[in-house]
Amino acid sequence: MRMIRLSALGAALLVIAGGACSRSAPEAQSASAPQVTAPAPSPAASPDDSGRPKIVALGDSLTAGYGLLELQAYPALLQKKLDEDGYGWGVVNAGVSGDTSAAGLQRLDWALQEQNVRVLIVELGANDGLRGLPVDQMKKNLAAIIEAAQTRRIAVLLLGMEAPPNYGPEYAASFRQVYRDLARQYKIILVPFMLDKVAGISTLNQADGIHPNIEGTHIVADTLWHALRPMVDAANAS
Image 1 (cartoon, rainbow, N blue to C red):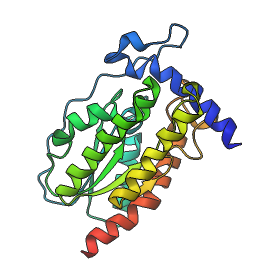
Image 2 (tube, helix red, strand yellow; image 1 turned 45 degrees about the vertical axis):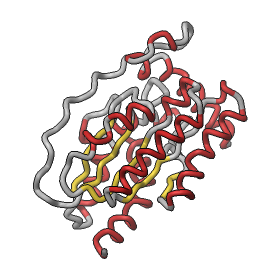
Image 3 (cartoon, helix red, strand yellow; image 1 turned 90 degrees about the vertical axis):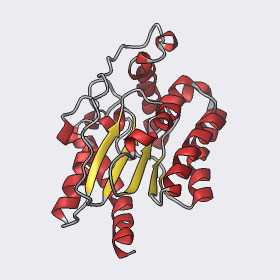
Image 4 (cartoon, helix red, strand yellow; image 1 turned 90 degrees about the horizontal axis):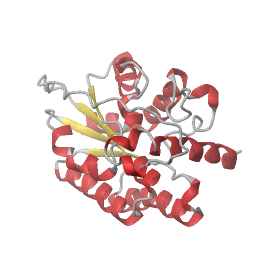
């Protein structure tokens, strides 16, 4: 069953290669891949200067909430969970569709402009895998993001992703291992596959087969909340 789901994920990710990545690398599009138009990045919201603890979600279209309303993206669902459980924390959606790990690193300072950021969710790498970019470079970019956050004493929640199968099993295995190696090296929390129980299931994804629909996004938020809540509790206790 896992192999079937990952194969379906691979087919879906190939669509992103012709769509969400197209704003920065149109020449990388597959002539036979269906086209998906990525939305333009949203303008940066005004920083929240309330001083309450913040969680910043740095990512690509999966974080930005492609095809969803702002309140339906997983950062907003995490905000709802925090509010319902009485946490006085805020969640900032710093997702931009089409971002690679390099693009995420370039705008890290912008993403961390908020006051009192306590946790950084890092959801990057899917677009690196789509383009078949070197795994070692992705690892360096993600490591630089993690190190920058830790220098600021910000806890990091790393979200793992799977590479499409068209680059072969060796690339896929190396890609997957990056997240595990980084989690071990920097002693951070890892969600091995953020789309677990969602990827490859048509009823949980939008028509493009790539991005979770509302129901799928709720499952993603539940998966992330299971890892995030203990981090918030630990930060509150410190």
